[in-house]
Length: 98
Image (cartoon, rainbow, N blue to C red; front, top):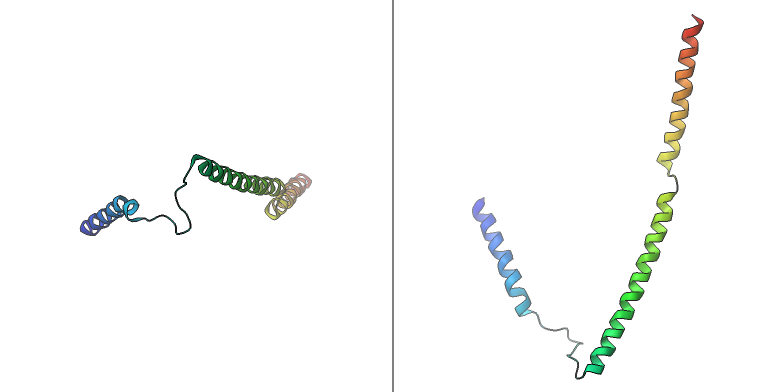
């Protein structure tokens, strides 16, 4: 069993070390020719990242609002507590009569 684990560990290390060397750039991208092109690419990337972050913030706000509302478990749990308290009160009242 330890031999298999050692072989897997060696394979992961080799993939990790050799992976970046064998990667080629994406087919549609090329290195920028000037600083202006690099600046334009950075601005496009920043605007795309800002849009994505804005969408994520909206989704998080919606999730917070959803989790703030009581769910079905909370409602039934509250009803159960009420019935339990009435049951205890009825039990105590029936014991006093005797």
